[in-house]
Amino acid sequence: MSFQKQQSTLDNALTLLEIISHYSSGISLAEIVKLSRMAKTTVFRILDILKKRQYLSYDASTEKYFLDVKAFELGVKGLMNISLVGISIPFLKKLAAKLNETCFLAVYHDGSVIYLYKAEGELAVKTNSHIGSRMPVYCTGLGKSLLAYQPLVEINKVLSRPLVQFTNKTIVDREAIHNSLAKVCIDGYSMDDEEVEEGLTCIAVPIFIKQNKVVEAISIAGSSFRIIQKKELIINELKNIRYAVTLFKILKCFDFDKK
Image 1 (cartoon, one colour):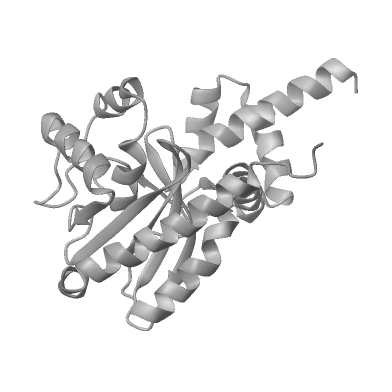
Image 2: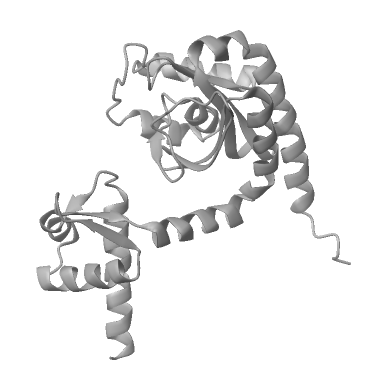
């Protein structure tokens, strides 16, 4: 196989992975062919290879393709290298055990929150959020902490898209969202008060690598009654972790071996 043909095949494979990554509930072969504008035989051949290498899985009952474990592993490793998210994990493990709730760590990508880590305490409740999942930024606690520090042009781009109302508490008024993001910058934390799932509340804080440069966000989520009851304690605990992690990240950015 010539170098040009190998390059073309690789480019096609990456294109297909990117298309499938946008469909968490799966996507059919016909839809992939339509979106990729490639020949059906080419698409099927590449999908078969990716499936054998565990980058994709196929559900015969729905006839849809999904990203599989290898694709997820690569993504998480890449994000951890970029944002040094591994630094936060020991703190979140301890906090989940201390407060008996669920702790999350997430990063921002193109209007979405990507969940990278989850630690569950004894009182953890079931949520729709899991490692590797994506959620909108405008209505999640983590999302608001991440979106609040994006450039205004990025915020406006995100809010120009259709805003889904998940519950009767989901804020979809754009002016109200802008106001809530401004409040995040003032208060230093954000909240999702049953905006995504009824009965669940989330409190989050952004993690900085330098002034106003947010690399990730951490949160505690759980039963609305318990989270509201422990609100001040949770905010203080999260801010303490933010201080420790941010300081560590700043120090990691310096190469002290340089002369």
